[in-house]
Image (cartoon, rainbow, N blue to C red; front, top):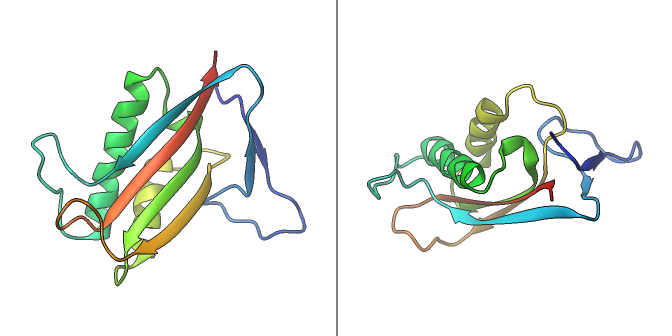
Length: 133
């Protein structure tokens, strides 16, 4: 059950992939998930491209959320880092595959970076979720 209020002012652009602002009420527990790369359970990259790595990173985030008693619907903010030279649209497509037709997508920040800590990684995603305390 989503507890946050998703805010999309009518004077700003609307996009089905993200929300402009999200308000979390007092008394909610917040869950901060550090940046997840496209590493599978064996520690290998799921692929060399943004889409494959983004799918795996989102799966890793879902696993962390579940372990914390939350789900993807509880995410209020994503931060996505993509290595410069890679197409961000492939990452958004992977996100849409995972998010599907759910309403109220989280707020999002996307940044191009020179590199990531994992050799060969081209995408990293972190999340903030909110659940009832």
